[in-house]
Length: 188
Image 1: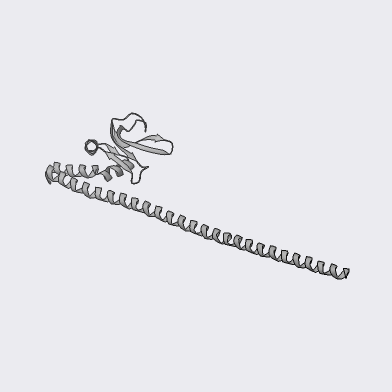
Image 2: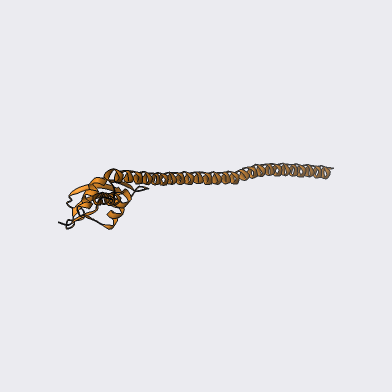
């Protein structure tokens, strides 16, 4: 029975997550599997990968062939490295303790890289948020400045209207006074 290590799709439409499984190559993609080895969620940034490395190495050493994507995931999590190190132990190049030590060192370096990437992403999100807030502050400031002259103009318009009304009253009074004088002259 040819065994494949592959991804089995789960999740809803346009929101996939995958199980990493060892399955008979003739089985359906989402069908029967022999063992679940882990979970892969590409929706998060960085992608979430949980993998049982020892079980994956067991299947790889027994001849299971990973698909291209599964091979990248196994490489990313160190299953292929561990298989390679155990092959060196089998040949007598070094002992099991040395292989475990090398694998642990590699895991520490990998975790540091992942953490630095996660911190970088968090920092970029924070900077983007600050930029958006600053842009919004500038827009609000411009909006306030644009509204402020209108208020001053409306006050100025009120003053000019009052002045015009006073001038009109003066003109009316002057016209009335002139008309009254003309009437008195006519009477005389």
